[in-house]
Length: 329
Ligand code: BTN
Image (cartoon, rainbow, N blue to C red; front, side):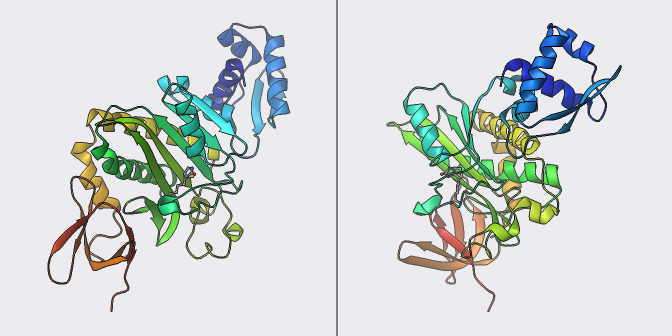
């Protein structure tokens, strides 16, 4: 995918549903109409179809299925266009690939996307189901200069940003289950896995992994997930434009990261979390290994720890664990 092809796609998308003249495109790019045509041939080979009308120009009438790097890059805004993004057909885990590339010295930030993962990982050593089915598997690699203690809030802050993005793009209302689940009516649509390598008092590098069920069909879940998982398209009833969604998501995650590093999240974070927190005021049980704590969820503290008031009135804070909402007796 050359830069010229990305600009051609960007210009055509900007004019939709109208045509864009070959002359205007050639002038914009400073190349001949013949070379425009040659680039469009390359795009055709990737699954695009263009309608050409004499005196009017071109417009896109068919796009490739699924994730397409050029379509994502063409829809990135401003300085995000410089961001380094890799789209892999298949990988063990995008988080593992990001870790390998950080270790090899690749400059951060960068993004790894995959159509399929063969060893997608979740929190607490669980697997993340990662078929090539229209869902999103993404890892963002950063080298932030922040104290390790701020990591917990980082994931929660990303969670509220993802919920805001989903709400803006789909008008759905997701919820967040501390610390890292994006839910609709108790079913999981997304999970986040933040991993870092830490030096004595500073994070050396940080990987933010996100699995988001965007267009996965309802009947494609393995039996054990079918009652617990949901995709956005099941809720919107129509498939989402995955490349547009991914470009918007990349922009939002980068912005949220910058705000976090600058400390600009502090003013809005607590209210946003309250807005999406599905546990608050509910009876919950938290499991930490063999330990089980029951009580009422009372939100989070300023370190991102979950607050639970147990039956004897004691308020306890937890920075790790697996929470479930208990049925009211
Ligand atoms: C969880 O809910 O436990 C977190 C799931 C995180 C899954 C994503 S998919 C992309 C990235 N690569 C991985 O191996 N895991 C994360």
